[in-house]
Length: 340
Image 1 (tube, rainbow, N blue to C red):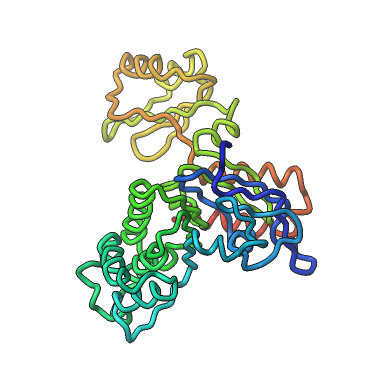
Image 2 (image 1 turned 45 degrees about the vertical axis):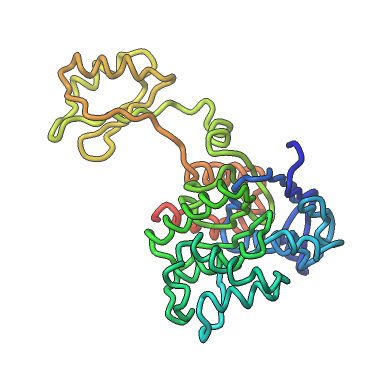
């Protein structure tokens, strides 16, 4: 990768016998939204602490915009905004007063602070609520205020650690949309740490799959799924008119088509056709010839749920010891996210 703004080389950190981060190599481009994906305890927060120069690695280095974090943490803090999973404010102060105070702590000139704070509140959608005390803010509003808090010093990079915890689905959608919008408008580089698979997929350009202190894979969704599922049968879902049924006779006819290996019912009035190659046009044509009323056709697209589970399964095959120490937790993580 050409001139990455975040570069982690051989980064490792242990706490006693626990290997929190194990030989981590990662590069993030300027202006990119990168998702660090993994369950609680995977080592994400430890990685962030090393990137900020708040803890020293046992080996390796974290270079942020040309500055080695453990050697020059002040320079890193000047250009990086960090938002933890729980943001604290002075409840007896208004949102504007909180931001002005933060601005002073960051050394913003007195003549600029109030205007910049008001602009930040407008940018995150809190302009009409700037005179409300923080104690009156909802969880979603506090997350937006936290984002304004991070952005007021005009950083080049923002790091968000589990930023959507405690938000309802609507709040999550709005907050992630805001992050993407601001990243695109201001050219911000965003590192987003999360264990919520579907949320990461919504907003990130690339993701890194992090398990047991190790980065198993990194890339965009298409490249990750392409690498993992090459050779897997094509899955084509065909929806039929309500009340339609695929008779045994019709199934037998469709199974005679080249490449069609299996037909399985999916949800009501729809079926999955598993094929050796993409024969969507031939399959649709044959269904119509059999008198079926088709209302929808969709090829299988692999999301982060499947990608994460596949990488995890592959990792288990390579390292049986990992299954003994953390397999149950990882499987619980996958199961929990599939329900979301």
